Length: 528
Ligand code: GLC
Ligand code: CA
Image (cartoon, rainbow, N blue to C red; front, side):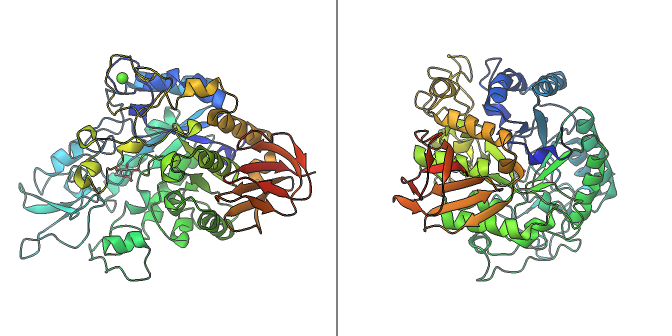
């Protein structure tokens, strides 16, 4: 076991409500994950990241936590969780939990107490402010989910801050009681055997002490910032957030092996992203690269993001790459327009870049987004912005284990909490019996990565290649060539043996004198 095991690992994200239902209520549960470990072991993943499993009123599906030290009853019990950890450990699989430190649920005992009076001992655990003289909100901050970030609480006639839903009041990280309480929460789960945390909106936990207005966006801001009309420099990305991350890392370091902190670092510029690794490698071990996920599936754009990360990140840092998650939908649809050739290229890219690959559940079979009707929506963001934006449900639908009613996710006569797509078109069982399937490609790429040190930790260097293609060396022995275009591409000066090709027809064949790639074809080549 290496000390920095996550550098060698492939991480697999599970949305627990949508993985496997064992008690016929249409909702996935922890036992369902435990029962799926054979699949995950067969696939070869090393680590699971579970979306929040803690008790929650589910106004934001687990991201509104009402108790940080328990399991949501629909998902199971702490005993079920312990069993999952034990069974996963037996197979060499680690488990990361999702931690939500930016806000609690309004049903959390702290907030229920805090809102009762200005003198509550819990009051200062949240961010309260008086209305402006005209009664309006204290400043111009906006909720990430639309509208103002402030809600007036009539009992005490003050506003409280919510960067997300009004049912998700923001914690006040200037209050040491909050920090101390979270130290305990971290230890609670670390002691139970979790390998680390994915830290929800961790770039935002600390707010400007003076609650200053955000300045307006300017023309040189990225489109996402311009779209919001203001730069989030006072409600997020404060310098003091780094103190909080250092504090958590100190706790993580007390464990053996060191616990992993993966941050949801929702920032658009590289310098801010890199800062989350800490000046002395003393903050996050992995910081999610948001521009990468949200990029188009375009060789020029993606390789520029990767090249910049490669040259900007200090040697002590390590990248993490993903194409799907529970907010951004599935790569099969968003990047690949449900074109299987593109899905194969995307998986080859993710599994051969230098950095930790993070696959979403279903990526291994190229599971597409599911189109929902308005009535089927469960995500508050989709309900608010429908039909302009259907929200995040299309990428949160149940795993498709086999064809037929229930899709192997739940009993045949049960209605799942979110609808299936087309299980007969895309499912684990059918792909498992077909060695040329996307599932086998994923598994073979993971296996190759395990086998070949160069593919895990070897250097990355971008080679010159025609437009629409992306070719890089990994270590001394490997070249990865991806044709991310609709035209046949000629890649000069590559020779060797194809270890894995996206369509599988060239596996183990040798070639010299240049490489010709079909549209949306990729190969991993071992040099002579
Ligand atoms: C993060 C989560 C998202 C959630 C939000 C509020 O962005 O990934 O799903 O809605 O935080 O907690
Ligand atoms: Ca269930």
